[in-house]
Image 1 (tube, rainbow, N blue to C red):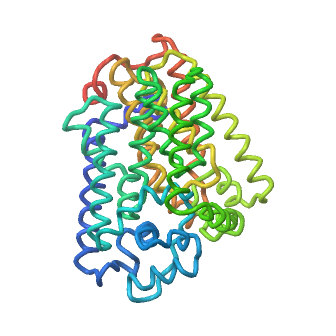
Image 2: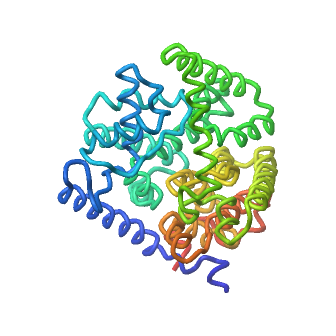
Length: 406
């Protein structure tokens, strides 16, 4: 048990080797997928960038003056069928109309070039942001790129990289340029389910300038979407919302794929009412811990990492590509450990959080075992402990991980 507490099993060699293996394997699979593709369809006749057809076709609707069709499943699915020349699984557009402003340019290019440019642009922003949470060096780049959640996000053509860039950069500005931080964080309007934890941050610090910046940012986006797409776009969006509820309650997406507390309870046989109650209870606990962390004098990267962690515990709608957000607390907590020494269980918890995206879906789908909520909650608890602990609790000397572990 000592090895688990101290993290002595996480040697320098392993800390460097595992990310490199993930990155190399992912690169080989990606190249093989491209070489064997039929047009834009890869393995098992799945689109390359699995979820990206939703984004690209929504963009085409915007560019052709038919933005509302993104919220009409028949038209949206038909557009995806035309894109690939055959009927494929439907990838719904469940985002608010303001998200159409983000994806609008994607349809200016054909599908694959658009996908690669999307991933290159948002991926670069992701790397730049995460490296602000930990001293930049050649040794940190491979773990950032090889993070399983980053690889999942890339293969699915999703928006997790963008979420990391917005949340990470916005929160890092919250102390010294509060209004600008709010403007940036307001851009997370495309994922409003994360907003409650940002509200906790604002209230904990009484950062009214940040609140004002966020409010104006949100108002500007809503106004722009209304002017560009018409006021009826909001009723079109409202018409698709029952699908989100059905995904949760009727298992339109398998429970093993969902990574929330709600999904965990359902996967273990609990009813819908119990699942919602458990989700609410954990969200309250996460909000309370986040409040305490942001009221403390913990470093800003650590507080920002806590916010990203709490977001993943606060909503019933979480998928494994959302785990890219875990890069922020992992980087922040690792940096604190390198500077002042690691506390008990931190190294093992960091390793578990880093590996989680690689195993969470498999464990849920094929073993019926939900792993995500408990590991993510543990990470948040460890951040809270560090934010309130004194230096006497440290179990390792100050120094880098490669020196502190034999």
